[in-house]
Figure (tube, helix red, strand yellow):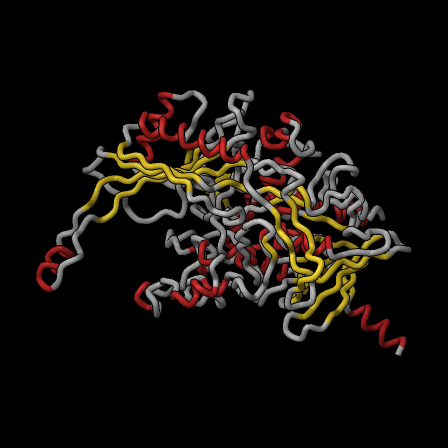
Length: 570
């Protein structure tokens, strides 16, 4: 019997374990296997294989039973997830349903999740901007949150490394607030977007309108063909899964690349309960996993553990990993675990019309749009709120054909289509300030279907966010008027935090173990063989999208961890 147990433990022992297979987990798996480590990748959801498991990717609108719309029954059963812009009849299979994975809203919070191999990398919006030194020095300048333990120069080479492999389209714009990268051919502008860019450039020295930087293969290189991917087809139905691999996802890129090494074992339907901490050895030795189908618990062991479960679930796993040494969660000597969670503020928007260029229209589709980098409080504090906001921008022209008639009138109308005027719009992406009062914790009584404590979420906007919204609306109104746009309308949809799908923090990086969880290598200060490289590790949130930074953190951290392991340091 003893020999049997030894054999069982040996069979469940790997060099490294990665918890999660989304954007950061995929990168951790790719890098670990490339360095020769036998790596177990644990994914709590089902398997989703590239191409074969995208059931709606080639369906036309008329082929959907409900023409792509959600039924009332689906909406009623999923009041939270139904708010997400990407959730519709063609994507239902990739989103977590409200009742299946409950959580506690101590304050209103719309938690949008994708539990499957690839995670949310299948449904993300694919915007991939680098962060700059203005972002990594933000907390040090204004005193909110703790100082980052790194600067842009530490991450720059790793941004280049992941950009070349993932494939990022963009222009080299030469802005110090938004460093350039290793770009593929940029997407094209339409005439009204170009008009807006020129008007802003002529009236403001510190405001720029650039083409968005996005994870699409506009001009694939050999490294992308080697992954089995092809040029983006501009179908703009990316969230259904792309059979061409035209946009970056774990499913099309990092996970199959890791599998090709022969070093990866992928185990779907594996809900991680907690990380095992060995008091005598003074390090983590493995993870406890509940099979999602049988509800049986199994232990897996490894020398290195990367936690990439997505920000809030990473918090949950660490909080649930208790021992005599860590009674309040693994590595939680600072007492900061679960605290200082922040997100992006997408509440405000603006729209308008443009009367010019009526002899022009757009041609084709484009899975990207122009972008306005942060311009407030960059070089000095100039407003009554901290940090700043970026903004999206787009212009388009739609059909103005009357389709309300019947018979011959309708036929004539459809055969003689008319174009309406130009519509323009923008949305904000504001940086929220990490605060101790924005936290997640384990509920003391409620359990999920696997017997794990439910996550309790207490996150809200504050006065800084309200002031930022007001300023965005004022500044964008001024910029729209300067461009000659008319019929300007402002929007504040009062959405709950969470719907931005950019939750970050709770396991933040920092220089001081007394005020942070992770050091500059994304390594737990107190447990040297555990690394966190997803959104949970973020010290502040910047105004840029965070996914590219998670990728760069993952590659950089694996490089450090493997070298440290070979030196016997972890």
